Image (cartoon, rainbow over all chains, first blue to last red; front, side, top):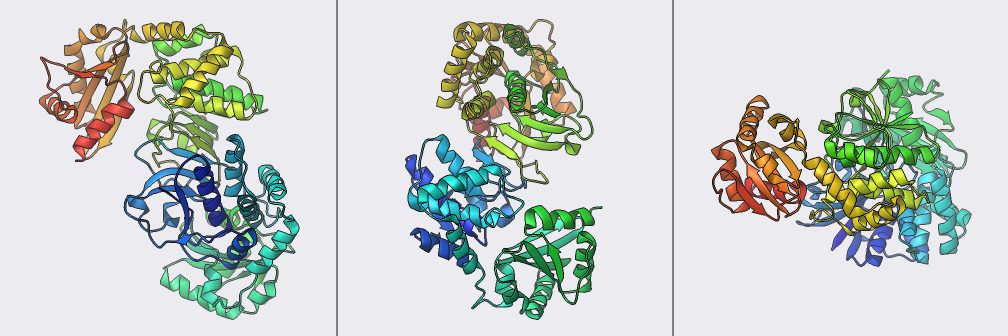
Length: 308
Length: 308
């Protein structure tokens, strides 16, 4: 049995790509199961329901002797407990090569600079003449819409657009309608405390000599997050202390208007954002027009400033 | 300009795959040049001549600011000087994931558990509907014949066989005749001293707590190497001393009869080979029937013994 999984703090791409890749392996005669290493966010829950897909089994660690297929990550720091004892059979990913994983024997690896892992998985299916069913096509389409913010993120590539167009056709889904539903679900912060909101989509980066946690809150309704600014600042300060970080930042991304609002816990991060993006904080937040992507915009800008 | 290259101590696969991948990039509208980081062995020289291909430019280090496409390696210890300052654009390889390379941004990577990098490159050409010309097809066929010892090595996979059959057709070459010529060229040890012979195909492995240099001499005429046994033993002892190795071993692989003869410089390596392969040295060498592959047979056997 091959266990297919993505990164901790699972998002729509990691979850849908795990399901799609497990299905792909099954079509090729393998026994495979998609699992998720964490709770699903509201967007992903909406997508699974919308496409009529079952929620993958949630795991908190891998079983001893597990054989795993990784999707949407090649970063050992993002893997669930027990990965060191597992045999990695394959990696399908679209992130930079982190360099922390090694294997005892040659394995199958494909990584491409596209916005979404599901785009690569769909290309693999095409190469082998395997046509996804409606459910699998819908899940992959949703993953692409999620990672590209419906093609508005600068991470979007031509292969992502082409895959999405074909998958929408196969799934019989209206792309705009699906994206609207996803982004509304994603924007629902009800029931989430400030720490939950920060951890929905959050990663730690070592940039220059600094260790920064960068959280992103993608939403169609920025004010629902911005009204919680003081609690979010407090939660950022607590995370910074607990995790011994140099800094902690939260970017509330307005999906509709393609812009971000930065929330910071101290003068250090304020100065960092002002210098890296060459802007001024007005009142307690900073408005960053056009900024929607952590990978392509936020991290490179901060890194350029910190390593200059 | 993209510089395409493989590992130090270039062999037929690394050289032919570099030429083929550079050609593939050119077909896609890129400027690309294959280079070789070292002198070519006699087999590779024969192949280039036979296929009417130019010898790639030899480099001893990369230029500052080079953009590189790696083939046939993902191991930083096997890369030519200057790679740390180069931008890695892509990796196409068939070795285990070593884990030492990282990149600043997502790149294109494909690794597959097949015998030969050229097999993967041919698959990439097929996927994009690019048909190699006769020269490029001949080079890729030769790479496959070299890495599979004409399909007799246990590393051989179905994709290697399929690619070779199609490439032979395109190149208009007789596979047996090409392989015969290659193996005869490879077996010509004239003009090579014992150290040269050991370094023709040689790698260092860290197995358990041991650091071993394992040289392989693939030949159709084992006696031409075996008559040099005493000089080879002496050269192994010198390498061991100079490189502070735990052990140094040479395996003379009889391509025709699929067997290897082990040559060792001291009682330590003798015991190691006897225990790992469960055989006895007769006189000064040990006969290992069926053993032809360092990757699939020699290293795994030694490793199993040393880490037991």
